[in-house]
Image (cartoon, rainbow, N blue to C red; front, side, top):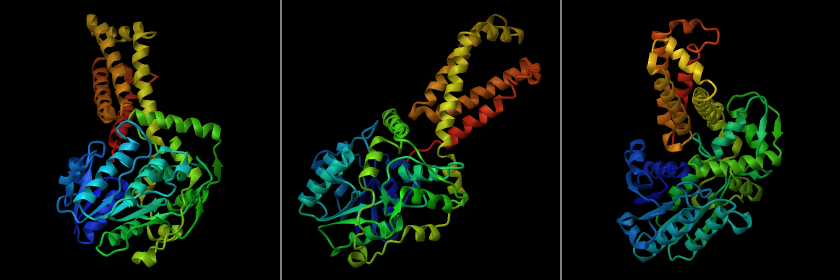
Length: 431
């Protein structure tokens, strides 16, 4: 079979595409940036599939050519820069379903989510339920799968945040509500999808995909902490007065191109329903989801998992502090430290060029600090900081070598700054 997987470069979609390929199917993989995704999974037939552009049925026809089934894994938590909940959950799927109804494949597996309903009080839940209504109203052989929290070796978004909180030093912060989860293994979810794309598989039904074990948020984080090999730590419930502003800051960062797992939608969805009811996948397709503790035991953590968990919350702090340092350095140079900066350059032998060099360096420092906070330029800015700091170090070592002996260490402090900038650049990654 040829299966079109939409959102194939995403967290769930990439695993679904890989599982379908392993089962012998030909995968036509839809993604926003297929060129980048092709490097990661070169055997798939990658095509560009941006729901915000595919708003009419005729635009879907080329993507559906010779396709036997469609698996839709596209989902957006909240409106932000580059993400539209309505485009991802309503207009795009409506055009897709109409195209399939008219002349496309008859089998559609749609990945929704537990808690996707109006009672959630979020645009995410309401729009997800709107998509489900569109699917159910179609003439297709449809299946709606509503997974709870999905467990996988790789993490993204909320699951990455949970590992970061689990690895927090000395305590485990609890950010969010008191919701309970029924975690499901990614492998079990993918096995259900693989079974449900087959001709003759059960159809026209909605199934919660949830594990058999119910755990609280605290139990989930404690379990992940133990899985990471870290010593037990007490739970520290953060007050709403602190979590609320942090979530609203996450909303703002999303509009600035920095998607955050901790946003107002996340908090409301967790307070509403993140568990669901265990569906009868064993009877339907022969898939028996594993319990949370079983998954932990069967998927041992590696050193890479521990590194990622420990660095998850450190990396944004590194970006903020590095940006502040460079901007502050430039502002101090052009304002209270101007005379001192020009004097140091003159003493180093730069003569009449000293004011120009001081001013130019200040502008460069401020620019790099600001660009570091612009998502699309962050990696380039970090590399620029490392190169600029290297030039400062070389110039200082050649023209004012006595600065190596300065008790404040103006030259000795530059190598750590270079390494911090390289750390930020090396850990810059996009899904």
